[in-house]
Image (cartoon, rainbow, N blue to C red; front, side, top):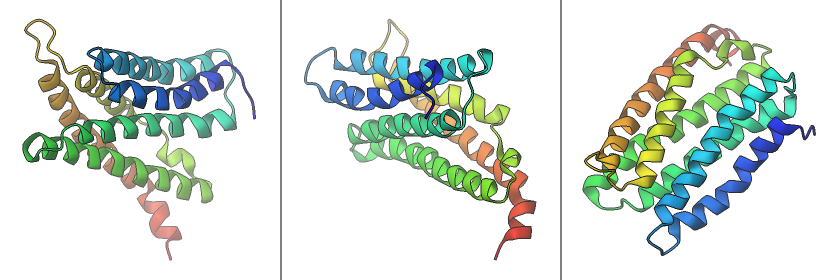
Length: 191
């Protein structure tokens, strides 16, 4: 295990998950602000650890494994928490649907990447530009939804819902791109 700075930032993201959950449910007026800050810091480390690893030549197999795990855990936990606080039928359905799409896609793509790695063709399902745009939109949506209080006349929660649905659409689009790229290998090596 290589505990360089990028990997430590990735581990920090995982350590922040229980802190994020506690802050999210803390029965104080500022809990949404604190939970949003922790999530935003985690989202920032997602970008920064990869940047540092490439810039400083500190990429590692451990980091390549751990980084997407940390990302998916943080996003999945945030989505589950947001669905939990929106249990009523109207906003609940509108939150649960994109959450299920996003979490389901992450499971499918993780399995696809593992399968492709077994075939020695992991590069076929490397991160795409659409995947990066999806992640950015997703993080913006989650920050807005976690904060949820209007900022002046800006309807933060409403904007967060819009960005969450855009993110869900990009999520499906990127999944199709990855599956299409892997399809020849899947057909050739399927049972």
